[in-house]
Image (cartoon, rainbow, N blue to C red; front, side):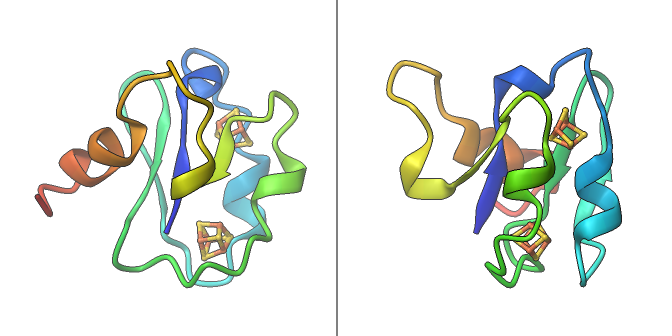
Length: 78
Ligand code: SF4
Ligand code: F3S
């Protein structure tokens, strides 16, 4: 699945929401989160984020923390 990482925090541009064909991007308190089981890995959301917050789960920059875990935890799937 794709994940939303730290640049989204307090930005919440939401361009990604309009691109997602399966509506699996949900709003949280300070950021948005991608449901790891609903995401179909289409990649459509990644290029539209103005702050480059979206990455395939294996490609989140090192040192940014466990965003794969935080996205999954938001939906209580882990
Ligand atoms: Fe939605 Fe596709 Fe982005 Fe997954 S990769 S969150 S399915 S737009
Ligand atoms: Fe956040 Fe970027 Fe989407 S700022 S809401 S991940 S377009």
